[in-house]
Amino acid sequence: MRRARLLAPAVAVVAVTLVAAGCGGARNSAPVKTTAVSMAKSYRFSPTAIVIKAGQTVTWTNNDNFTHTVKFEGQDDHKVDRGHSVSIRFDKPGTYHYVCTLHSKDMHGTVIVR
Ligand SMILES: [Cu+2]
Image (tube, rainbow, N blue to C red; front, side):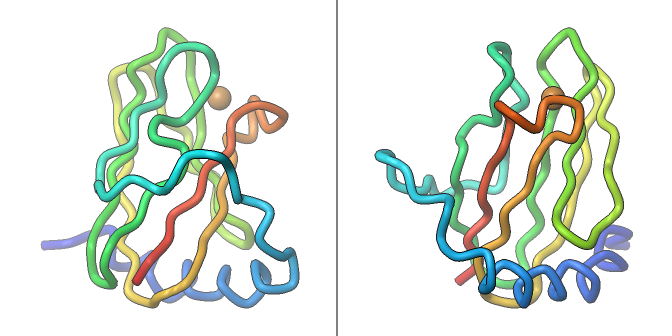
């Protein structure tokens, strides 16, 4: 049923490394309560920071004309072509940072799991 669940145990590992990385995701805008993230134009994830509940699945959809990726530390890089999406389930509370490896300088985001 939930294929993305397979990723959950590995995603949980990210939390350990993120603690060491500190809270670099802090920005002016507060995290948005949603499970839908768009890869929009201007090379950014929108919203940049989201907050969800443990057990929820986040879906990234590429609404841009270019291919982007979703890569959490210690995880596989999920390539998302234009018009496609990827879903990842988060079972453990924590703060998870991710990047688009193709545009890692500009495209990064945060998933806060409560
Ligand atoms: Cu990108």
